[in-house]
Image (tube, rainbow over all chains, first blue to last red; front, side, top):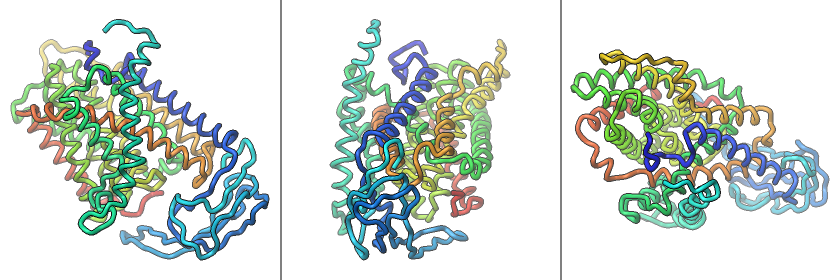
Length: 131
Length: 369
């Protein structure tokens, strides 16, 4: 198609657009990883789904290692089993994804938490690690 | 168009891109939260829960509104270059979706995805070539429509058109027909999925097989389940989508070979040259992203790092989908008629329904991951 007005891309060809998309996604990955590993001073760890706080395993000021449990949550787990949706209440523990120090703990056992809303634990992580 | 130089070209992109990003910002930050709380028919969040009107579908609808109402049917010159970055955003988003998988997960569903996609892609192409002959349609129109309905609404039709000597109007009608069909299915599929209590796995497999445009597959999956995470509709749908996109050069070769076989001045076409010129290499970026995820370089599942990565991914897609909406010209779809429309609708509907029947019969509700 010689008519440039009809072209669906700002690039010289689809190939150029494909390469640009690969470069753009690589740049996004580099920026996100650099930001999280070296720039962000602390991260608020939020509940990954709605539930009720059962236990908080860490206190403010505590040093934690990657894999240490931070808190546990009572959640409703939904799973398809033999083509039937099975729902059961389960207690799940959530762990630290990087070494670091607990700066703040919000909430107490029994509190209802909403997915992605408030931070349950605020952590300062070791520089160069991905929280 | 005069040569503006690199700086001029980048500058020309800014106004349209600003409209796309600004639109998404308003939709995500103000409109969607308002809709989640709005009470309609006595039910809070009815617009989102029942109509599946999340920011993804709203992005497409707003893009359509810009093009067809606000801009009077044509993207104005000042915004045109910016809107032409649409596919860059969608391709970038598709590459980033590779981070939802590890290779072992891909292997678990890859076989089923490849079987279904190859059967449907070539099945549809062969069906259209037969239907075109029965309806006595022009061979160029039939070939373009076979590419459009078989594998991918826009890319395959554009790739096939020169090889089968399709007129620009045939190409435009094929694309309009298939995009129009895609828009209908985009709004209907989440209802059908919920009505039939499809699981994310079944829904992703169905939509990935039955819908023919990367943006529309994503939008439909996210309308069904708005989460970007392993095991969600979009994670399954995308595997099907990527397999389909990889099929493009093979289908282009198959249809071009069919076309020239029936022409007196036959031209030689080789699979090698078509693969070299048409293979969608952005798929390699998707595989690269899956490799990074398999090596746990992108952060642990459930980490705030992956959370941020997926949020950025949602913004990238959102911007692309505003642009996708702005490329839907209702007048073009309305103008599509006659044999191309009949062929497109019969083939599209058959594929869509048949894919649903096969998914219901053979794909279990339990996802592979």
